[in-house]
Figure 1 (cartoon, rainbow over the protein chains, first blue to last red):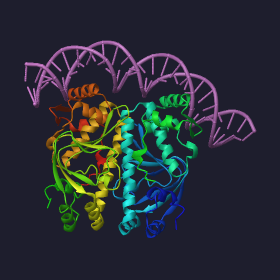
Figure 2: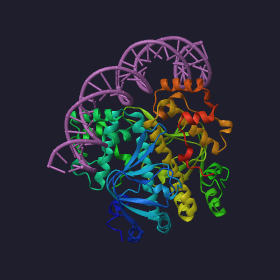
Figure 3: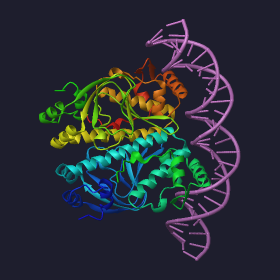
Figure 4: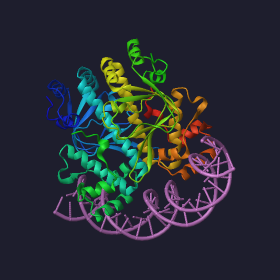
Length: 240
Length: 240
DNA sequence: CGACTGCTTGAATCCCTTCAAAGGAAGTGG
DNA sequence: CCACTTCCTTTGAAGGGATTCAAGCAGTCG
């Protein structure tokens, strides 16, 4: 029984409680290998052919690629309740690397029982599929964010997303949260150099929108941050 | 029987022919409303709550978003055999707009029979899920492309993707293909201004890599284009 | 054939990067 | 527990890739 490990996953895939007890029972009884990982460890790497996926129980993780020139792009962030590499259930070869950003507890789930569960419990199968569709929606928004918005706006947008997603699992009370990223990490996420990240953070602070210090983010003006970040949470597809 | 409408879809989801006759039969017998659309028409819009998805039978389509400042970002291109908005099967509200770039024949499929098919034919359900995962992989690559690469490289990368995808359905013999995009469209896809697109195209031509004229792309030096585009087709997850 | 859309080119400007350097925080080892 | 290293943050200055502005040209369509 993994019921406390899957609490945030359930909050995410079943915010209004429509899954049956049988569904929840099946999910809670998935064989899961609980492992503690340190910060900065690769969970799976680009090019791997994994036979399992990984539920993030707590901590932060990222998906990143490195270009031929050696530049890193972070394509998404993952928090408790996410299954970053659920895609590997149907895509043989990893096209991206998932890395822990903090100490993380993860639950490894072999593909075989996972696929069987999806087949035997269609509501769960649909819910799993849906989470990958939401991930895709986030990637799409990031394409627009990185492609069209100015660095200042981009940064605000990223911070808005982090806050909203963390709030859904109760980790951003009062619009403040842990954000275990260095300025270099943030730069890799929004496609901006470290130096410029530093200047933009300074500007967002002098504008009275946020304080970001010691990997702790505090939003001082939430409507203001959403406005400067051109942020609309619709793409996160939260129904709760 | 829609067997000729789904030919390219089948090529994509079943390149090595593992689906059973029952699977293929079920797919071919999906109730499908065939419609011809002119160029520049929205298939579904951001904010819509569709009850159907759309198989692209022939023609080109794009997925795009408009930012608060009025800039458009194209997040992906779609060609024959793609189901651009399959996501709407499980995500109630559209977070992006799909638009035809040419005259297109599309087949609208109601969600209900589609979902039933996925449930009744697990191999098809998995294949459908898989196509949305490949779409997500493409979005991820685009994030990296737009976020980290220079405009010149970005452009080459986009062209490589178009060629490779069109080749899988036989529409890019000899590394030449129709590419019904204006320079403004290309700019919106790679996050670059029209003026700069023009200069980059000129540069790619003088470098002897491509010719792009009258919406017709001809690659003169495929290895060279892949190299300057930092292109590796792995993210397209073609198994055939 | 005039209006429109798309392509092309030049010039000025700017957002952001790169280079450089120094201070601070955190972790390591003697 | 302090010297030392290393990583992270901060700030200044110079340079560059890309944008914006502007204008001319070509092709197309009603």
